[in-house]
Length: 621
Image 1 (cartoon, rainbow, N blue to C red):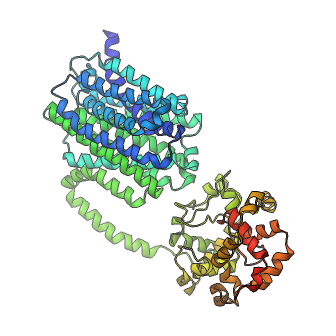
Image 2 (tube, rainbow, N blue to C red; image 1 turned 180 degrees about the vertical axis):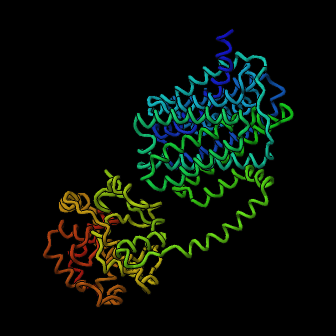
Image 3 (cartoon, rainbow, N blue to C red; image 1 turned 45 degrees about the vertical axis):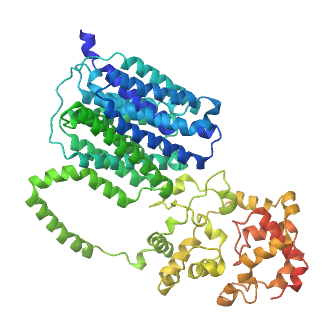
């Protein structure tokens, strides 16, 4: 009897752990990795995930209709069996052709399993508190997924583990016990719609952060790479989950949600600053475990549902809207923005904190109004009293960096040359992680709408930078960059040029690599003189033709007037072909001649052939 009391509720703990482990290691991670391993292109994964979400929503909403018709063990075992079947099929070599059906099975299995399990969780808890069972099971599920051998395993191994977990779950679910649980806490539950919105905001934040970390090498290296990181994550998950359960048992449901959104929100904001990744790597798992425990405990015992059917319906809506829909929206945000906007973090926090604020407002309305009035007066006075930084206290480069941030250049330009990639050939030597972390704030960038600027000071002259800022299209006819001529109405334009010109880290190895670069023989064989003429008109004529837009506008601004067509032809005749190709690709040091890094080797070879061609002499000006 003593042993039975100690291990009371182990079945419920095991089922919660199995459910979370299956979702995390397979449905959310291993399944997509398995498809990629089998050669499914990234573009084809969107309809697969859409199918999974569709089935998850459909079966989450349909399962409550079966609650009164089937035994709890039958429903839970059915969900586990469908989930196991999906993982088993994913192991087959033909899984890529069955990607959408497998995704439908995963969504259906999890939809049935999650709603049935939380509705009847008491059946497997014995005399143990449902909330405590939810906390320990959630912590063990997350900790198991962070075990290095599991997390870093091959996708096929993760699918096999998921299948095995479902088999274990079926064995556990079959040993259902009569419902006899400890008294759960009673609290004044906010309206269900508020709770639904709060959980949706939390899942949204979690999914966006998960996608961003998973697809950003620098962030992934600081959170999920290495045995030490994974064991720490496992420990944080378990401790936070048990802590959340203890708070919930003490009637602190709003506190758990508030702690979750504060931790997740802070982690999302810190992800934009790689130097703070260690802090984010602790806050993120803590926030996830906090709300994940509540996501099980609330529908299973804390929702205040008057009947089993109402409990099931609330669970169905909770997992359909907050779970599946919130997750899809979060992944979409991470995929399309590459970041979680600070405004959205504030909005999500407001949604989650609303129930707590509602209670505080009802009890302390007068005090809050007085506080708001005091802040409304204090903030303007504080801003007026703040000493402003004068131009004398900052260098031109420092002022230019502030202009760069203020004008939102980070939205289109990165400052991170990725190691061992084509970045190094196009933009310069790779950027050391230490240099990125030392920046305050780091300007690693969001999306590459334009070229990387980490080494732009070595690739472009100060004149070219100034001219391009004033009229981008005049120098690059295909540029989508808006003009920033208005910055030169005061010192901001010159400061920005100074900052951009300072972005350069000398590298002898990179200079040697440029000197050794040349188009292959195969590229020369397929190059086209006519294509070279077209490329000249698009990329070169603006400076080298007598009537070129850049030549006319800034004819007195060049350090040295660009050679015209005849001079170009004479220069081309005097240079080895490979040397001329290097000039086209990398530009000429000490002049205003820029490189053309975005041109393919075939385009550069075609342009060189046209420059060497006698037809150049007779081409009209």
